[in-house]
Amino acid sequence: MLTRLPDNSPLILRPIRPEDKGLLVHGLARMSPASRHARFLAPKQRFTLSELRYLTEVDGVDHVAYVALRADAPRELVAVGRMVRHKDEPAAAEIAIAVCDSWQRRGVGALLGDVLATAARDREIRWLTATMNAGNVAAHRLFNHVSTQLHERHDGAVDELRADLAFAA
Ligand SMILES: CC(C)(COP(=O)(O)OP(=O)(O)OC[C@H]1O[C@@H](n2cnc3c(N)ncnc32)[C@H](O)[C@@H]1OP(=O)(O)O)[C@@H](O)C(=O)NCCC(=O)NCCS
Image (cartoon, rainbow, N blue to C red; front, side, top):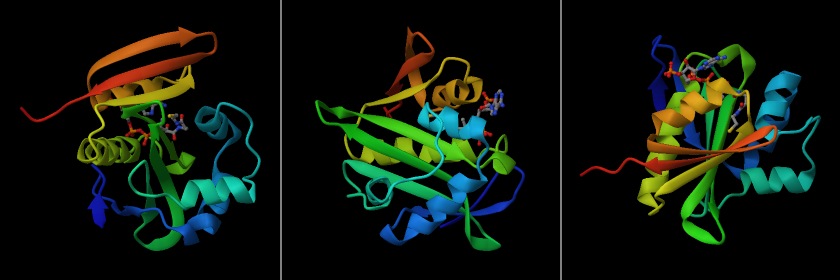
């Protein structure tokens, strides 16, 4: 699907595919150490093959992921967003979004947040959770977008957020 950012830049948005492993490898290589740490809550140099399988071979029901790609260079990753249903709480899912540094602050994260929130509602998910570094203002603000009510739990250096999803009346 071709979509546009608030500044009118075109972007391709589509569900992730098993053949996207190379995209993720190159995308991670282009992310700054700070952004990688913010996404994985640890230094992250590379993905193992089993991580790449997990990240790209999703079932579309309990694990949903989208990639955003440059419209003028569709082999270049702009961002990834994913949602994984909690095994012990099927009405809740953990989300994680990573936007390549040069594309941050342009509305890509908010766009993926909206897409994941819609995917969650379609799959009878009512709550989204996320774990992030305590100082991650961008992620906190992004999470606010998709939520009618936000609950936060501080746990040392990380914050656990739980968002009630907005449903149409
Ligand atoms: C967090 C992240 C996904 C946000 O994506 P993004 O495309 O830069 O965000 P958007 O442009 O859509 O902005 C979303 C909100 O965050 C705010 N924001 C974005 N970057 C910000 C920054 N550096 N400082 C403060 N606020 C920021 C925006 O102003 C907007 O809030 P508002 O609408 O209330 O004004 C992106 O910064 C990122 O990938 N960071 C590294 C990985 C990470 O932290 N992932 C989150 C873990 S779940």
